[in-house]
Length: 97
Image 1 (cartoon, rainbow, N blue to C red):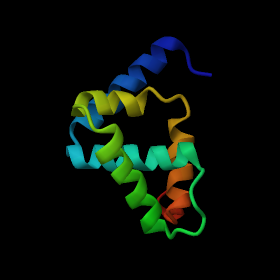
Image 2: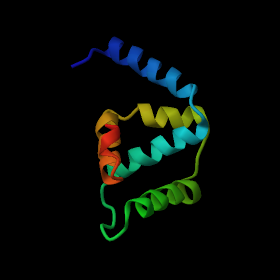
Image 3: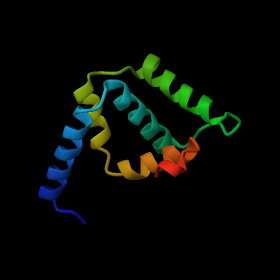
C-alpha cells in the first residue's frame, strides 16, 4: 500500500506526463477508462462500435471540460490501472497491456 505522500507525488508525475499529450489522446484514454469501468456493453457490438458509442456518449451527452479537468478525472480513479486494462481487453488490445 502506498502512503499518501507517495500517492500525491505519483499523481503529480502522471498529471505532468499527461500534460505533454495532445488533448485528443487524453480523450481516447478517458474513453478507454470508461469502457473498462462500466463493462456493461452490448456484446453484439464489435470492438469499434463499443468505442464509438462510448466516445459519442462522452462527446455529445456528457461533454468535455478542459484538458486539465479531464486529466484530473482520469488520475483521480483509484482503480485507473484496472479500468485501462479492462478497457483495452474489451477493445481487443490486450497486447498493449
